[in-house]
Image 1: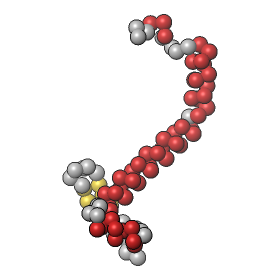
Image 2: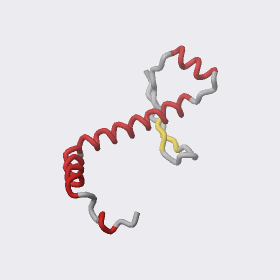
Image 3: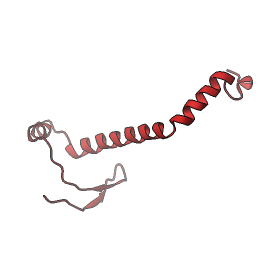
Image 4: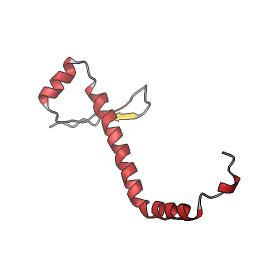
Length: 87
C-alpha cells in the first residue's frame, strides 16, 4: 500500500489537498468512472459533509445542558428584550 504525501492547492477552493490511498468497492468505482464522476471530488465533498455533521453533533452534546437551561428560562420568563420588539 502506497500513501502519497503530496500536498497541492486546488485553485477553485484554494484549500490544500493531500493525496491519499483509499480502498473502494471496485464495481462502484468502475461505474463511477463510466459515468464521469470525479471520485476524488465526490469523496472530498462527502467527507466534508460528514465532518461538519459530526462537529455539529458534538457541539450540541457539549452544550446540551446550557441549551436546556436557556430554553427553560425563556419558557418561563419569555425572550430577553421582548418588550422592545417591533415585530
